[in-house]
Structure formats: structure tokens, C-alpha cells
Length: 336
Image (spheres, rainbow, N blue to C red):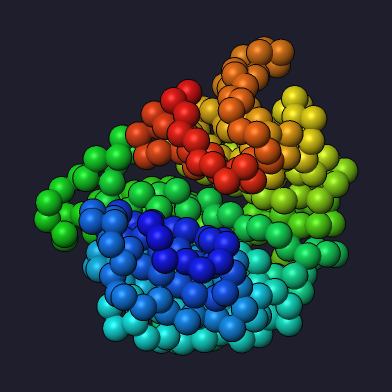
């Protein structure tokens, strides 16, 4: 897909799988039709004055399955809600005093944003107010993850990647049921990763105080991810390790060692049993997370192939393919 004039920094599929949003270093946002591979419009949206750090689509069950709205975050300290049909900015949120590093649109209609100003903010997407400011980190907040984000990403699709119904009302009903089931009695939890070597677990709907402070990494934590079932959390750090934590209490479970350089990103398989990690050492490692199994056979396989640092990973809906992107300017699709 050609069109960007600078590095592409963020891509995100819509929950119905029909659209793809991509953003680059110039602050431009492109929208693509995933069936044809063509742009939805000849011209990109000049979304922000500086580079865009992340994109998040409105959850499928909140807008009757229309998949029209998304939110972007940027180095210009703003968050903006865009309507992809009218191509207009519906609202811009200001409040952060430094680069906004990550944005997530939650299933209750709240938007969560993390920033280099050491805070996480919770915004109401309906009346556009800032509900809470979560403070606790002593340095930049690099990444956030929601306990429900996997269910929100799949929308009307089953875990096998199949569409559950042809009727839009049934699809919305299914997506809402899946979300409610995943949210459970504990609500939508959020975990944040920071340059201060720690992670915090939050229940932002209940309190501004963290549920747990998770320590153990000895260098900055670059990325964090809840498992699809919401029971575990994985964190990737520059201390060359991946750590696994309890998704409810934040308790430390196990450390995965094997990389010889910084770990940039982790990615869960759809069944929450395996995890892939991408590293500066140009390898991808696949780990078995059956916690009952003996510790020494956690590493399943090394996936070599890249000639330089591996920055990013994603697993396909059906769990058969793992895609990786590297500094060697190659995308590789692995069949683990």
C-alpha cells in the first residue's frame, strides 16, 4: 500500500476488518479499504502537526457496528477523534504536557492515554471531559494495555477469526456479550509500563490509586500486553527479559530469559498459551506459557530470518501466522 511520504509509525485494523488506518511521521493519516487495498480518499487527513504515535478504533458494540470513529495520539500533546465517513475531527483533547505515547478506546466509551508527562488520563468520549488523572510513575509512561483490548479488537469475529453472523444486530450483540464476559466482575483493568523500570496495574473506573506496583525489571519497560483472556500480563524490557505477571493482582509469576539484547515487543497467541517476543538481537522467540509445565522447556523455538533489529509483531486472528517487522526493512510472515 503506497502513499505515505515518511516512516509509518502506527497501523490499526477496524474491528469489522473492513478498514485499515495508518499514520506516519509527518502527522498524516491514511484510510484504506482492506478488500481492495485502495485508499478511501485520494488525499490523507492532515491529522496532527507532529508525528502520530498511536491509533485506536471505537469498539464495535458502542456504535452499532458502524466502525466510523477512531482516536489518534501525537507528539503535539493532543488526542483527536476522527469520523472516517465525514473526514472531520470531532474533538481534540488537550491536557497532557508532553508527547502522548499511547491511546486506547475502552469498551465503556472511555479513552485512556499515556504520556511522557508521567501521567495516564481517562477521558469520556461522549461529553469530552477528563474524568481521572492516574499518577504514580516517576518517568515517561511508554505503553498501556487494557484487559479487554483483545475482545474489542476482534469485535464481531470469533476466536477462530470467523464472522459470527451476517446480521449487523446479531454481530453487535455478540461483541457486547463477549466484552461483558471478559470484563467480568473486576471491570476494565489497565496496566502501564514506564521508563522508571516499573509497571502499575490500575482499575481506572473505581479509583485513581494503583491496584499494584510491579517491580523487578532493571531497565526501562518498553511494552506491556494483557493476554487475550485477561488473566496474565507480559512485559518487554531493555534488560533483555520478558516477565509474566498475574493479570488480577499484578503478582510476579516467571521471567523468560534467552534474548541477548533489549526486548522491544511481546505478542500473545489467541489462546493465551504462547507468547512471541521481538528483540534488538534480530530474533523472535516463541515461549510456552503453560504455567504448569517445568520451567526449563519454556522456549519453544527461535525464529531467525531478519538481518537487523525486530521492532514489531502481530499474530493473526486464527493463530496460524505471526508477522514481524524489522529494521532490515522486511516484513516476514512465520508459520510457527
